[in-house]
Length: 445
Image 1 (spheres, rainbow, N blue to C red):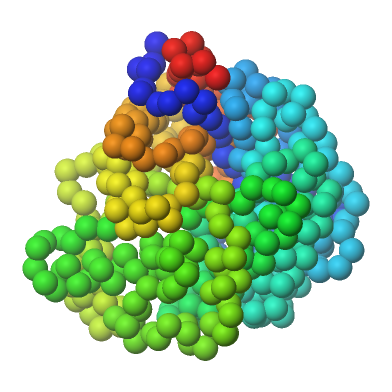
Image 2: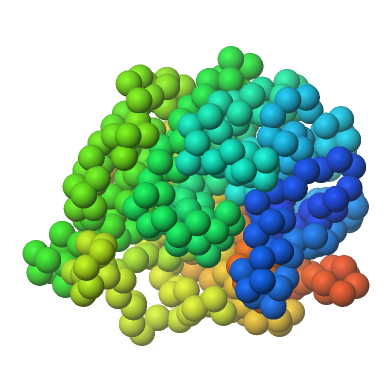
């Protein structure tokens, strides 16, 4: 029997996925191409040339996957809508077949007693919008608001809460600054307009959701940043990295201003992207909740090469996931306390919208069980310090397409044989199911 973590009554348990990583069916029922369809076709862009063309075939197998969720006893399921499935070119009239798929998915979830928590954008921008500049083009924010209105009008009668964006920091850095994710630009600091345009899109979409009486969240990838030593140089470098990774995508939402980016030679207008009134638009609709995606802390030292004002430092003497990421559960406690100390009364209730690990292909996955248990213990420690955390969505339900790593990193509670599409629950699936049942028995729903 799993430990019964000291989490409050009414705490919500879930799993998370994303459209391009599991749906497949990329050329069916009128779906348009996304930047990930284009990127995966580029030789060498993705390990072993893998693509999301089939992925977990969730588009056809969603009833089987929802049955697995129901068996887990989940309260909620966080998934994303594929923008190019709803609007094949990112604008204009909706694709009826695309909306019909999400109708079926939402209705099946509700029939299983599971609350849908959709993410509007999880990195699969319609290729037609990328051809017009993507997130470097301010107009994309307005197209996103129109897309939001389309799906909110169609599904809002059954879906009470929405996440606007998933990990805008990662999408900007990996997709626009470094070129290791779609759309594959390597612009370094010239990628910063993609940060502002995503946040502007959030503000416009949040207003559209609020007008319809719907709750609004955003899912930010956050990391506690620590200097490698107490030296002034390392502390300054850690402050600079924290501003880029954490504050760039949280300060505007909660404080109405961008952080100091002068260490990067960047002013508050982010290379001219910020127009008068933009920050008012971004903050006009308060967040119902802040989604926090946590995987590991980051240790930073003074720069060793010119170009960026920091250097990453390995965290010694800790376990590592199959991805090589350090496992530091107490970092989650530190992160949540940092958020409280930084934002105070401006901090909305928190939901852990992603937390999980990749492990080798092993159904008896004791590493994942230990990972989840220690992170939930760290989360419980934060709640005893007064942090208002409403739920936990582990990443992920299924082994899936892991972006530039293709199918080489397995994050799922359920093993997927990508040749046969057979689903096999791992030991962590049974552990999570027992944990949810034990929490309910102790605390009630």
